[in-house]
Image 1: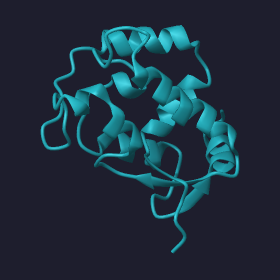
Image 2: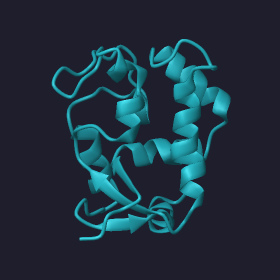
Image 3: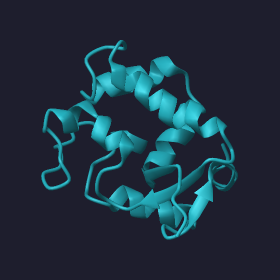
Image 4: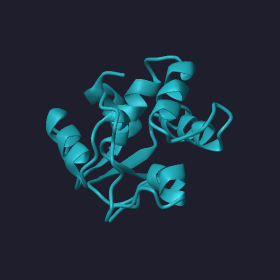
Length: 136
């Protein structure tokens, strides 16, 4: 089986779509409000932008979707690194909104994203295919 360039939890596609539609400042404010970061200079902001915005400009890059567990975004997340959020003991959310601001349940957001866009988690997609399917 072919190895994709990127393995990504399906709900992080929603985050990628959001990053392509709203200014960076709004993302920073949302990450601060959710207590993912303390300020806009946090390295996690740059990592997310590199991975989900700039990384999504290479339309031929291959992506394998994942349901649950940890992907590249999760492993770099400050909440995971400080062990305030793990797949076994999810964070308690106080703010409910869209994308990464919603209540967390293992795999729930991934499954919702897969169903919403009729994606197949066993298939390897190109960034171009995913951007076309999700309209961003």
